[in-house]
Amino acid sequence: MTSAWPNSRTSTLLNEFIGGIDGLLLEAQALRRAIHADPYIGGFEQPTADLLQAALERPTTPVASTGFWTRVGPDGPSVALRAELDALPIVEDTGVGWASTGGAMHACGHDVHMAAVWAVLRTAEGMNLPAGLVGIYQPREECNPSGAPDVLSSGLLQAQDVRSVIGAHVQPRVPSGLVSTGIGGVNAAADAFDIVIRGHGGHGAYPHVTIDPVPILASLASGLYELVGRLIDPTHEALISIGRIEAGATHNIIPDSAKLQGIIRTMHESDRRLLHAEIRRFAEHTAAARGATAEVTLLRGDPVLANDHDLVVGLDPLLQAAGLPVADQPFRSLGADDFSHFGQHVPIVMMFVGTGEEAGTRHDIGLHHARYLPGEDTIRTVAVALAAGYLAGAHLAGTL
Image (cartoon, rainbow, N blue to C red; front, side):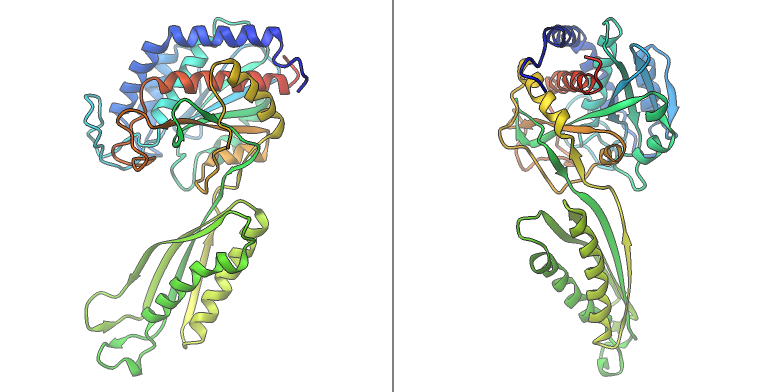
């Protein structure tokens, strides 16, 4: 980016976006409440999509089953904004009058993201945009298989000449009032593994005539945690976490098999490949040393979410100009988001909009918690950040 960035036209457009978003804020808050009160988990989001399409009052096109997209502005190169449609299977415990009651909850802020994208799209309708603006309402972000690959396989990005995709996510680990960007990896590659140890069961009083899979699994569980510390460069972020162990049915029966499930998170592809290979080797050798066998299934998930250098360089000054301070230290975590798949095709940036230290929000009440509820002013922050991201994307595309 040149020293003249942002230029005068960009500043004018940014102020137009801010004014339009502010004018729509009460409607956006009402829309957020309606979405929040009636959430749907991944694969079942059609009622949410219907509500948003009615609120947009413009032509839309289905994508990825329960998702949809719409375009505002001129033909030619475009910039896309992504929002997630799905909720989580969590019983809400916020106590607000518009809380959900059906066993699902927008506990990850997707309701805020949806309302914010709506405000940007509605504002953009009355503007002379430098590039097309594509709003993507994507299903199944929280699911596996997730929705982003389906959006990509639809050919939407190519058909609409999308040059970059912009995302923003509320984040209670970032102080309220700050927006975090950061060049490079900000979320991890997310993989999972299933390991089944097969031995030979029998009576608990006669372990010498069995091959007990339980102590083998216990040894394996302990050893898996050591792999990261002894195989991965200490300056690289990586982890293995075990989420489930299952064995046996009652007190006095040694089972034939025992099962373990866990996750792998990495920020470097070489570390990802290494851990996949070593988990398999360690499990098979640990079992074989005790006369058992190990069946290892490795499940590749989302790739690393890496923010594009040029997008971030163009975006940060726009956020500052919009009155949204950029965090000095970018927020990076081993969480994952299927937004990363878009980055395999075009430049992307994911911003993290701080909700930490809000009234009623504690640091131990984070994403996916039954009491996590970003404040209504967060809608404005997310919307303005997305508008800034659109302008940075238009500049990167050479239209601004």
